[in-house]
Image (cartoon, rainbow, N blue to C red; front, side, top):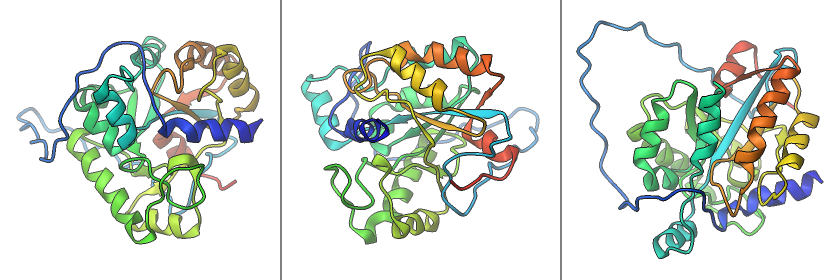
Length: 279
């Protein structure tokens, strides 16, 4: 069952759409200019913890769970959006639920997704409930085989992470120093390449099964069955057809986890509470 869920997660690079409409944008190359701050001085926010090893979950006795949402975009998805074969790759209903329930979350976005949705990214980045992290530039695999994803040459891995990080910084005032491997595929060389870019690889220990899942109740049951203190749950922000029922499953996930006494937090808070644990 977990293998089938993982395969479904990896197939997200094929296509995506969601409720609502999108505004097509050109691929920007310049950097955004930071607004000048003229108000009173604000105390500096402590930097998020950045362990020098791969993280799959936080401390089991933390009583916390981090909900994460991958925002995938590939060249093929970009072309499908341009051609009108899919309407969107952003399901705003997910963010609506997070805001309505005051639920923190972490978004792992590819550089191409940010370039497709620059205004959306800046709006979400201003939401104190949300934080952004790196999901590569165009969702290419960092090792092979990886379920048919195109594979980055080993010598390009670190630069891909840095390229996506530059795009993040152009659109997000304070991105977190975290990275998630496309498809979850990695080896020790890939981990070293990510660490060389100055970020921490963050995976998950709970696969929600939202990818290509058409039964929101099954998605909810999966998360509630597998999540425990310290868990990191992977879901997707893309919407239908690749993650069509995430928005419908999310309210039950949030309610169910809180009913068990678990506190929902961002990844940065989960890792700050106690030292992250290896699997």
